[in-house]
Image 1 (spheres, one colour):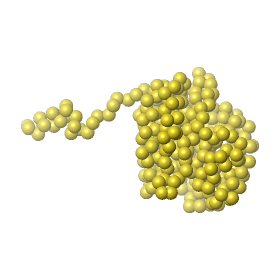
Image 2: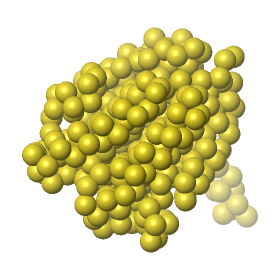
Image 3: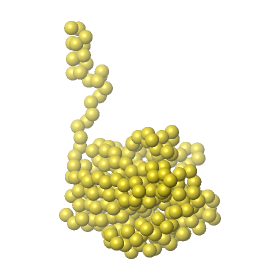
Image 4: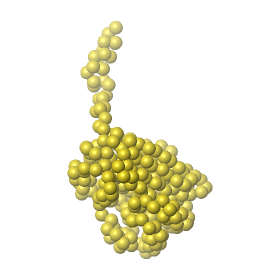
Length: 292
């Protein structure tokens, strides 16, 4: 199997510093990422979204254009995904015009893997938070149902539902870390896949690996986040190599690495036990012990 090499960056947050985000460092750090990518010569670049820290429509247009200009230094093809900050004051069409590419849901076949750019709606609705449209779920279901190659799924918002304990932003705001209700449905769709599946996302500003239904879900640290590397920005970006293994390496000040057998992600695990008090064999054993 030929090795597919990808470089990823997430949550650039170009703009003013806010909370623990070092937004004024974003463009210099993006230039460092561009130099890394040009030296690594990957097959493609994936931008996982939140290119800016939003202010208002006029400012956001300027900030997005400055980030788009920074990406022009990269020689490999770049695929963009919108994050919630890219969508607070700008439409999908605005982002597409600035970035010069269609940013609807897309499957890119590269060698032995399918790159699934799941650009599900990432706008935070007020009230309501993240709302996962039925159309995005149906599109994903169609891709999974017809897949004949291993899937590498990329999105801004993670659907792993992993714990946010210790997360500066989301420990006390877990509903804002994912699609409430929708994430569970997305995982059920992915669990039905007959091919290996691995998922990658940003948004939560830390490096994680969570196994759900035997499938790995990675999140990538933000380029400008500092809550794990205070007082400096993490400067994080990743190299992903896909063949018969999934090889994930995060660089910068907040490093992380993992290597998994891709085929094992297609194995379906045994259905979990029901609550012990409902399982007939366990209930019978407990009753027998109580009678002794």
